Length: 385
Image (cartoon, rainbow, N blue to C red; front, side, top):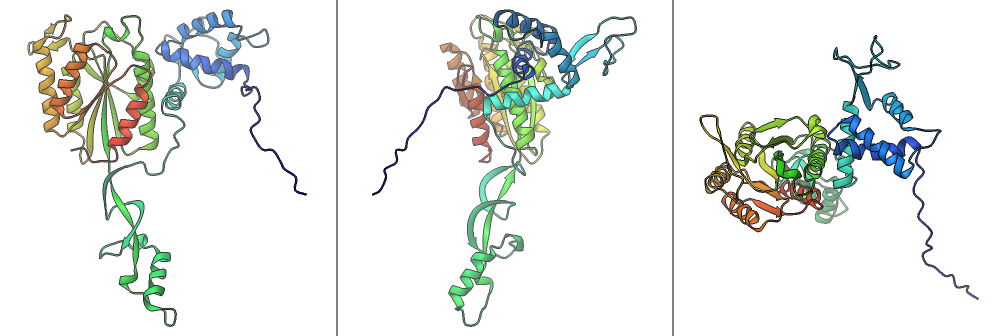
């Protein structure tokens, strides 16, 4: 007599993975140091406030113990007036004074990795990290597809299993013969490098209206930088910020990025982005722009600034359209990630995008990272012309 067994799911209360006191605080600290733009003292002040409210520590492990462990693990360092950093066992300078504590390069890298995990998920590093053109032929990236051998194909691409199978089918098993008509190769694709400039709006409006727009933008930039440098190391990413003017920033400075008391000189940002991309050779090129969408400033030839924050200024707007058309002539598509929802600004971005034949995403802050990742992945599969 057969015995019936009952199968199904058994549910139990979720138990969070066990964390050490350091790990629990470190997870919170990484978020705080991002929001405070790398200001260690401010981040610790916030951590102490959270500790008072939620009792994150006890007498056996305090915030001060956490700070000492951060030092021991090389995540922070103490700097003194002479520019030196305190080493192991150094509590202060020779006069007993305390130095300023800052995060280290190790911590900067960890913040970028955390941003990548938060926004793009656990993406494993791939081998060669290059971008397909979508055109098969005598390239150097395998597609998994098979085709007949052609003169000039490399011997390393020949599929011996399939070729031997063809030889048996074509000539029989009696007297084994393998000739050129039997050979099958695995198809390949040429690789195309991608050069991207990411433009980040740091005008004052990025923190107005009770909404912090700069921190999510900064996280996206750090995640994109970590994605490209680890998964696509032959690609390039340059980052610039634009307010009254535009200037490049190194990837390592991203955690410290802040909004300033600036208007929005979108034209200056686009000019600098195109200058950066002109210097890139034999590569696909693109511009990603994160902005709240309202250009309000131009720098005139005499060095003075023309500013108008009331509505959309026709003179400034037309300059933006001209830059979009110039980028189009240079085969540089611009993808705009618009994080404001004002109807008149969305209309401006539509006209701007049409002039460039690029793309625009009208998004809040929540889906910003996913949209940028999906667009980057989509663009790398085709040649941008």
